[in-house]
Every structure is written in structure tokens, then in C-alpha cells.
Image (cartoon, rainbow, N blue to C red):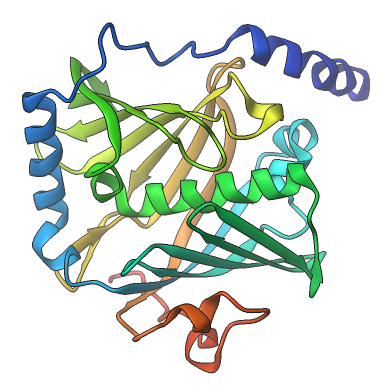
Length: 292
């Protein structure tokens, strides 16, 4: 088993490099389709677009488990010694700031993501190495995308088109192909498949490239979002399942849960972009009950 893992770790970057952009097609022409944009807006409305526009800041907490094989293949991205649980704060206006306080057996990892900047502190010590910074930016932007679903894609698409319908868990879905430049993390460009359940109009899956980190360049992953709850007029996913699609099809990566959520604390940039959370930001996100 150890020999297998060692060989797989050696060939994974090569396979990934050869598989660039497989799993998500390149649009024949780049444009924003009226029909695709209409479906995206309908999905945003089903998620609570009007209420979403009144949200200024979000406080969330997560807890999850990693597949053991992936922690060996992508140790920098997974950072399993720290990324077990997290308290995360998002400010949406006037500009987006994401601050994540991850905890695990290694201690605390503080990530601050704003505009084109990314900063990390491990147990209070600044880390400026390129690979951890790129990985942290990929994660911060990705988690915002998974939590906010269609709202993430309402602006900034270089291309948005409609693909043939597919099924997710036996449910028919509209499928949108989006190209964003820049992509998420430190990527120059990424592509996305957005799966919208035809009955509920909720986004239930996002498939994406990961061009912002050298070790994942050319790979494709997907995250399923489920267990939606309503809070303050917005539908929020509470359960997330991530799989690798390319180069290793349907490899289980990560499962995590939304364990806490509250909105509009009145957070300001200085509450979450310093060396630590402020008093206002540090109070844990309101715990979600099973029946919320």
C-alpha cells in the first residue's frame, strides 16, 4: 500500500498536467447566453436573491473529514493538521473579505483573503511561501462559492452558456457552463459547470477546474451541496461532499457540514483582517440545530 501511494504521488502531477481541462468543455465561443443568464437569475431568486441583497456580513462554522488518500496526494492544499474545523467570516460590502480561522491537531491557521491579496498565519506566525498562499486562496474562494451558490456567479462571468440537461441523484438538472477570468484562488482562468435542480431551482452541484495551484493544475473536482435550510429569507446548503473527477474519477475527497450560521453582525474590515478576530468577530457562529 505504501509503495502504491508513493508511485501515485509521483505520477499524479504528470497525469494532471496531461488532463488539463478534461471533464469541463471549452465553450465553442465565449459569450453570455440570455437563456443561461435567465436560468441563473431564476436559481438566485429560488435561493432568496432579494434577501441576499440585504446581507452585509456572514459568520459561519464548519466541521469535516478528509479522505486519507487525498491528504497524502495533496498535503499542502488539504493541510489536514489545521483544516478540521473552522470559524469563517465574510464581509460582502463594499468589497468581499473572507477570513477563516481553521483549527486542528496542529493548532490554528488564520487565512485572510481580500481583493488580490492572501495572508496566512500558523499559530500566530506569518507564512509567505507561494504554495501555501496559493492553496489558501483556492480554499477561501472555493468555500465562498459553495456556500453562496448562484450568487457567486451573478457577475464576473466571461462566458455563460447552457448545456444539455443531466441528472444529480436521479434528479434532472439544468447545466450551465461558466468561464471566469480570473478564476478562483490565484487562477488566471477557471471553468465551472453549475447544476441547477429543475424542480427546486437550487444549485446542487458545482464542478470546477483548479488552475490557481501548481499541484492541482489540470485537475477537475466537484462539490455537491445539500440539506438546504432557510435563514433570513435565504436558502443555505448545510452538507457538502467533494469528489475528484479528473485525473482520478469519482475519488472521495472531503465531506463537511455547516455547523453554525448568523448574519449581519455589523462586521467591518478591521474586525477580520488583522492578526486575530476582533471581539465582535470572535464569538462563534450561532450553532445550527438538527431541525433548523
